[in-house]
Length: 148
Length: 395
Image 1 (cartoon, each protein chain N blue to C red):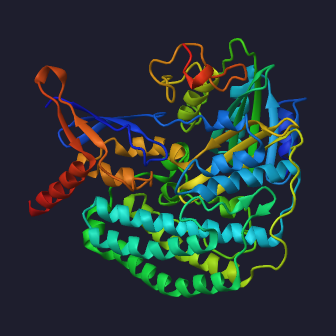
Image 2 (image 1 turned 90 degrees about the vertical axis):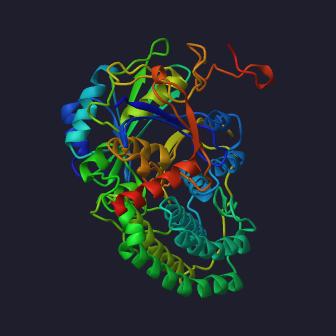
Image 3 (image 1 turned 90 degrees about the horizontal axis):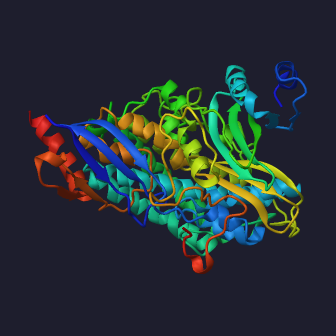
């Protein structure tokens, strides 16, 4: 972990967990602080937006932002409610996030208000609304037929 | 003059990530471009959630036919990190050697395609002939020209013996000599430079902001190379230089790839000469303790990114893969805006999206009110680009 990172982060986001070793850092903030945390990380040297992972843990949708800088990969975790997961778009800060947010919207149903072009990226145009294949409770219909 | 909309793609079974582009053109200039993905989305991430880790490795190796080792290694080292496994030194070196062989065949393939797209087919034939030598070596080492199946969780499945080592070492010198010649051709031969210098300009800041990776980023002066900044396998023990170019155009990207070939030969030679003795793999348990990890790998096209979450069972809870081509699409779209139609093939080829097979269908569609549609193939567009440049030069 880069020098002082733990202190810098906890000074800005008191009580939030910072873990990791070597070239990996894991931090977590609440959804309403996500935009602040991304701006903070960009200002403190994590300038390269590698990608974004979204996953369904069964209890929550997690969005993980992976940023490279200061010789380490920092992953920022945000936990969202499963019923209507939503996070402000990071595209204004990190233009590289645009395609990854659209992917997460398709596959896990996370909305990113403020996205300049929030269209379907991966799923077919006639894909039914509300079907998100990477949700844990989603399964293809028997025989591999598409549902809907 | 009215603006035309030109859809391009999406279907092409040979592309690892089939893409559909839609261009708005005004005369010869692209004024807007957009991309649509997913035409060959195979649901591999979802499929991995229903398979044991060992089977996932095979599935993941098949994400891409060109960088199969890239994906398999990224996944294997992620699972090894979750297991807390230290793999044997010999396995780390063999992974590195195969990784660089893969980079060499991929970059030579690219060099040929780039030559072909600009109408310089001599370069195409030279580069692809040399690539065959590497393919032969890969076949000798692994039994396959693609999908080498070298990795297992905990190490590698195949050794490199003395005979294979000597065959490979004997190939490196002539290959390095020929590559040095290609480097001169790429940098000096006007048949090539005339079509790529100043084309597809991408500034360093733009490359960073748009998340470009690999030669697309390094060709714009960004020193992003996972092998150096986040070393894996044996890269922290093997000497090599990270190649960058400040040109920021297609020529810069070509320069980076050709000079990287020379670094790859250096890495392969060093790794072969310093190949540690010892076992090839350690035994990996079937169940992976709960946890999560991020694994990065410098594929020939740039950073390959895997995220793996384990829940303590025999199958991954979540696997996420971000291949380098996806990361390079935003910067590709950016530089296509303002480019000439004649430069679409070479600018697109310059991110190396596996355009090894051509004849992608392209539909030139005039605005609806003005009449009929015309369809041309990728090959026709390539020919059009070559002719157009000849006419421009003739004045």
